[in-house]
Length: 493
Ligand code: GLN
Image (cartoon, rainbow, N blue to C red; front, side, top):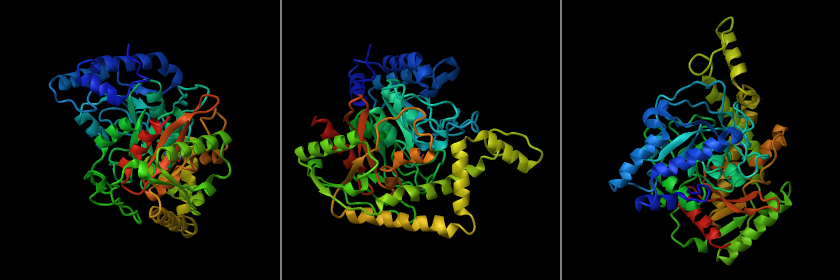
């Protein structure tokens, strides 16, 4: 039997094209793992398995993929099992965003990324559990119960794409799609020992992604290696007429830059080898509030990069410390706007009240969990007349200043490196205070605010065998170079 937990997409693809493995065998092994462990770990809200799924049954998809490969038409993702976060639309399937309010909502079209995966014959394994509407860092905000970390089930897998990360770590899929608004791909990747990547804003279409915060959201890959993550990335990028913020990606440069107000201009493609990169380390930013073991590991990783020929330079980025407070103004503002459509009339479940307003109130009170309600209230507040200028407008000014700070720093260095998270995976219930939970994203949110590509790569294990991650953030459109760094680190143990 194949060990899915060790197998990469690259290797599985090679074996299938050589006729040493079939997609049916591969998918059967993933389904077996799901059957054995999904009840306990609560990773998939739904596995596409069984005759009720018709052509969408994972094994049926695999049979088709095997035909494509047999006819010599297979590509790197043909027949590869991919887990999909429950906020990405797959036509004809439920898409609940981890919320009660959308419990029985069915997608009426395929998200752009799903169309792309279907086009190459990837096998969609099912919907993965997540924090409600992607708000959280542990999956404890899911209306369907938390996901357990396959590495240590007494701990969280990170969030909000915790189900997608756990699906790969538990051998239920070889790769996964997550969404990252403030770290939701990179933080769970770090907690589960994986590569997780947030592309440049606009590199991947958001058409068919349930919106959390539209100027921050990006879909991206989770996988075991950068090669695997890149295989998924290559498949899902592209200009889409259904998303006016999406951009063309040609080789290492975009033909047009990411488009939102104040977005950074695309960088010139890097022509040098990865080992000549200069990496900036904003040490002042992580003097406090970071686990000593995480810091030690970070310093060790810096040394490894130096040995590999990278140049490391201390940099000062005084505005980074404002990223988290700015994020917690802009993100809730967009959340309150995006979720206003969920009123029990147009979408989702309805609780009948005395009149239409009472119905809105009841549907939203019962349908949304407490974190979602907290953010809607916060968002409505910062957007309200009288507070708009003091909070929302001011936050945008600082956001632009943060973008500018990155732009300036990228004249000196190629990438910025920080730990991904200040801690390793924490225990359930450990971060009851929402502000404590929000601190988990201190190193991840700035890349979203600036629209920049950012990757979390595994960097070994703690004394209690929990994975560490380090994060690299680059100029707009330097996505491909980010993958190269992980490869260098991995080959430099
Ligand atoms: N954990 C962050 C939050 O709670 C980020 C979420 C995300 O990236 N979707 O908002």
